[in-house]
Length: 338
Image 1 (cartoon, rainbow, N blue to C red):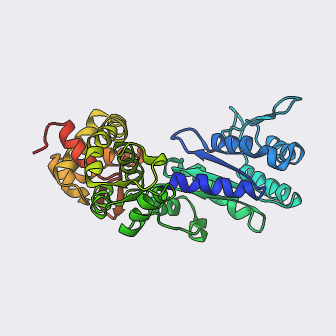
Image 2: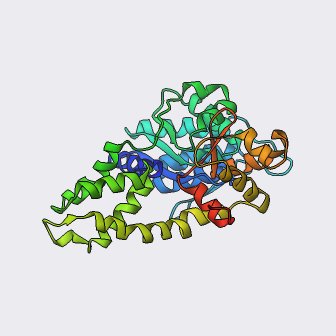
Image 3: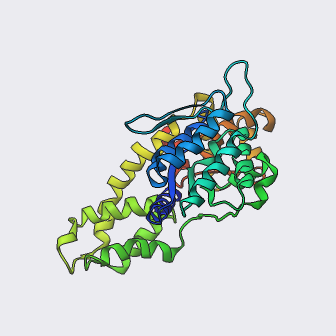
């Protein structure tokens, strides 16, 4: 189970309790208004049109560039937290929205929650505004839950003084036991089991990465003939081995290719230098030296790759690819694999 799956599970549970809740994946340069509007539109039916419209109308009065419309049909809203030409957006516009929304939720006996994925892509000024708004609404039933890459706490800390008041939980690689549970428990609901050798092989292939557990287990299930209607089936090591080629093909043409193609030609050169140095954690200075560059000059490409989620910094001046196996893909793609 990855971070996005966790957010959607939280979304379902909050809505089961009657909360206004919505999910939004942050997109680079989209602006925080896009995420806020998306979440409010998703959840407006929970609080009722009247209370939500009141909260949004308040924001409209505060921000000249914000337009809010409501008619006899579906409720619609457009939020633009960028001031119109010649105007200045009040610093407390998002604060006002959080407070009014929290008050409306409290009156309705529920709460409001913004669920934000890939928060590391949010502009630092927008992130600062989000932190300030959450602090301004302290004591009211409104807030946000966000996920991002492992270096997210550092980015949040750079955005404002309220970062230290947040609670952080690291969604790390799955343990060996976690992988076994993820593989075997769903199969057991169909009275299907795994040979111990098959389970061990999958544990090695998954490398603790949640998406790999999903993908390898799915392809193994298919190679075993999709035994949902065959209780008593035992999945074998041969089934796992047969699942490896299609799984790797899906990774190569999907996850890996998409990430690689997001990088510019110069950025791909940086990825190649990283991949040539190994599969684990790489000192950023070593990458710069391999490129024949200074750390300062190479940092431009490093930062761009980090903003795209392709690499991250687990420690100061240390880099790592954000998904396992990607270094090998880069070497194969650039013709440098042994």
